[in-house]
Image 1 (spheres, one colour):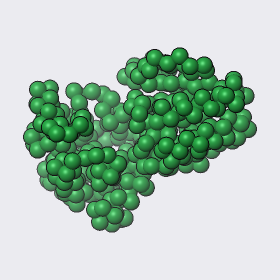
Image 2 (spheres, one colour):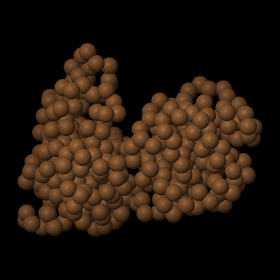
Image 3 (cartoon, one colour):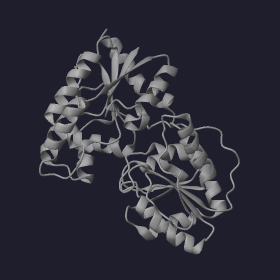
Image 4 (cartoon, helix red, strand yellow):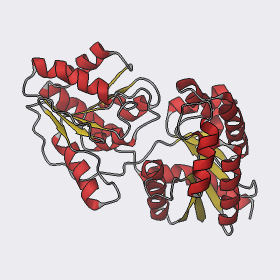
Length: 357
């Protein structure tokens, strides 16, 4: 089948949605389908204009993507691009596609969940939620990355469980992992959004951990912070579009002994899956779908619970504990491949597409 991957894009970048469209395309190709990526983008001038309109009286950036003008523009573009398509995977609802095209949705969270976690103005949240409700109603199946998102489909939209497919995510970075030295705790934080991903919390907790374990280190892969702290190394951001960037991230997973990303909220986090595949125990957040990502391969702590974060980091500083939990992390992450995700979504599309031919 020719399966369109329709997603919101900012400038047509290949890293939109944390590389999810590219990962799904690889998975669909491996299954014998023909993926057709459709990046629902806005011209720069319109993107700036809608952002300014959405920001009037409100401080949240990026809300222009949900204004009626932006949605209408993206919808026109996607309708033209869907010619000759057998079916589609719809990632997000900042656009709409014709009902004649059979599709499944694929979301990491719902609009009501986002509205509860962030300050969304009603003029944005109400039409966006209504649009998501229509997309879910007309879909062949409603794919989500976690049980957390699935619970919102049931509770907020009344979707029955038989129409929901919890499909997870795939890893974008993985490879062979040599034997690891567990004797010294080496923590790793990866996150572009320093505040939401819990970077400040990790740094504060690490100071206490290092006071007890002076040999402990922390590597930060994130936008430069200009820190000069004992035991802390800043690597800056890595370009995941390049082989060098991907290898550098994989090397960081290989040499660390604990991955720490206690986000304020986390729909799932591909980084947890990648760390798990590298045999790295993880510390994640209790808010969102990170529990599904971490599983038995680590611990979760509530955002802002500093003592719990310190305790979790100290627990996974023990070499024997870290080694055992890391082995469980590798086992838990093994099913998270883009081919598996693509198969779970495509299996819901094949009978639907056949019925409309």
